[in-house]
Length: 295
Ligand code: GDP
Image (spheres, rainbow, N blue to C red):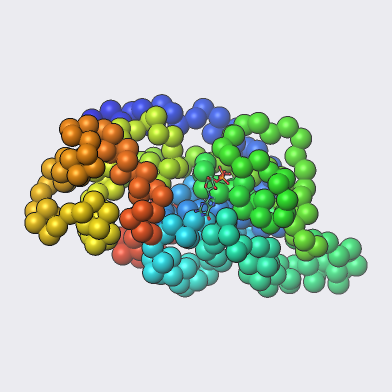
């Protein structure tokens, strides 16, 4: 079944990726800095390796969204890791307490030497220009809306509807292109596809819900066993069960008899909605030294 799932996923991988990359390349040539929006629960898996290649020497800020849904300590470790590697990064809840100053405080020091040089040469003072980019559903529109402080960008996942582009003012010091780049994640392994599915980065129709629920159960029994126990009223003995048997037990506990598919969907929703608490699927400990990209 796993292999089957993967085939569906790859078919879904859109043919307009090449166009999206071309468009993003053009946009990068217009800006000073790229904001790569990534998901705090999967800070590696939600990166697209093309972004770093296309961005090249230009400054590149990671905005880790959904920090409210991630494991707090894991996020701190990720931020420390990026800092150690000289990679600017901030973690935000894009839906709450997030504003332009969170971004400016990080990008001003990066950009001010370039802007000062321009002024010395007699060029007009100008705002910093940026474009954002990220995989679908990571929060690009939400971030943009927050920064421009109006409902300028439609929140939702609508790739490929770009008409004319325009600059949006984000305060006095920053301008953003109104069309974030959308680059699809790289499905290098089933593990990566599972992480993307569990966090909702890929459409529900392309995966088998029981596979994803099992993947989630495996993560929570290893890392957040207490939350799993509390949510589904499990006891210690239940953890002697295999993942599949645990799923069947939870199905019964949810009053769903043997409808494990329905239970799987419930578990996935519970996990995504943080009913089992914050979680982070990409673990720094699994990284090879000096590897910052999922390729
Ligand atoms: P886009 O496809 O990258 O533009 O993603 P959207 O901005 O449309 O966001 C996708 C979903 O994630 C929406 O339901 C947002 O409300 C939600 N979302 C975005 N950022 C955050 C965040 O920081 N925290 C939480 N909890 N949800 C977020």
